[in-house]
Length: 148
Ligand SMILES: [Zn+2]
Image: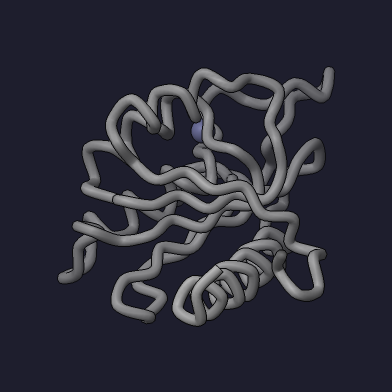
């Protein structure tokens, strides 16, 4: 690994840990996911899984099934940018769990060029779609001390 790559690896790990801390904001019981969008070493957006604005802060029904209108962390981070003056062209998305196929579609269309995730989700089809769109996908264990 070159010095430059080592530096990037450390940054990736730190942003991923920040995304994990951000996930603590989620009021979802079953699963808390956090995401950050970083462009030119600036965090330009953030998100965690939750209901749309104005809805009750409850993600699950009485049978503990996730409600269909809950937005994933990546979707919240990307749509937050849609309301800002910034954009995600060429940005990196950090997300604590591997993106699902629905979020992967949004990631592609948002012009995001790299995705760093910290936990394998049950389905791999989202990752496969990202790779098909030539997006760099990288798995990191956020607890790695040296990032190697
Ligand atoms: Zn998703």
